[in-house]
Image 1 (cartoon, rainbow, N blue to C red):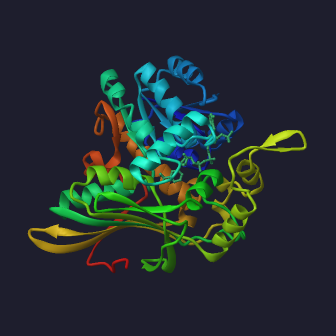
Image 2 (spheres, rainbow, N blue to C red):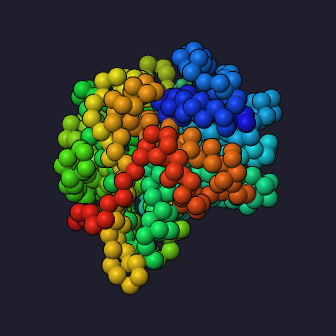
Image 3 (cartoon, protein in one colour):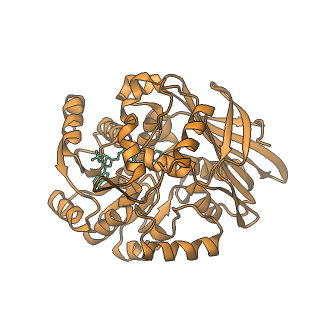
Length: 418
Ligand code: NDP
């Protein structure tokens, strides 16, 4: 089966190597990105380890026409988008035109949040829904009918969070609960890369997410907080006690829609004090802005300039030590009795580096990107329309997590988050 992968950054490099491990499914892979030399370097590194036939191309995925031309030329069964959330809609549009399946790991964000058309739609959505994050699923869900009519599948957000966390929810719902009442998604990175400040995935996307207002879903509506206003401590298996902060996160929106009867959904991520101090300072001086400023005759977007200064997340692997622990804590009812459950994965940064030359954040995203793509390509998770991960049978995905390097643990009666 032929697969087109768009993007060749930290996440893509893991996803592609994992697709190469499943070369009985992915027999031909075209890796296309903005900088072709990165694709060529990756092929050089991995070509002797797989039977899959690998090729590369240059593409600007902001252009629907360029992606359409690439698809028409290569004729893949599916396109895995592991570029940036800014390209989601152009790549979806191209897949629709060519009638091929579409898979991604992050929901659409607009690159220029000052664009007046986008701003007007955004202001309306903030009023209607009650959260101010720059990203939401409305843009991609709006494609559902078009994908249904075209008979193609779009699988949204098959990374770890979003992605595996929603599969954990579907699995808990299927096997452990009659009703899930609360979900706490806990994302802990206990890794240390030794830099005073660096982000584990694309800095622009990461810093926009963390510096924004937090929010959670309770009793049918969104409750918004100041950035990093809600802080809790949790003792994570194999990592230890960490501070974690409540963030807005995209899977809350789809879980609120798809897990019937859920009363509260929250998302927490761990951060060290050094990360937070650096981020606040950069925010205060305007370095996280996406609005161009003119510097000595040239327009510069501050956060993109910052990205050029920070370590490339794809290079952190060699230096990062420690483990991640990401999962979901559920409370609810089974057979008339109250019940609590924790499903999580622990992933070791150094083990990931040994296997694929990347740190665990890229690994925990790239492996599920491959698994979602594989299930769509094999027809196991294929339905015409636009879907999130909790809308399919979780069992084959959970089996694949065990097989491809992200084994999970089910723990009854865990400590709950206050
Ligand atoms: P990187 O910045 O490392 O890589 C992005 C890649 O996309 C680069 O190869 C870049 O090319 C390419 N690219 C950017 N713009 C274009 C364009 N217009 N046309 C073609 N290619 C383009 O990002 P990451 O690998 O860290 O992240 C990839 C995705 O994964 C993001 O969407 C991120 O939000 C998502 N993610 C999801 C997670 C989850 O758990 N669900 C967790 C972490 C990340 P170039 O080399 O030229 O810069």
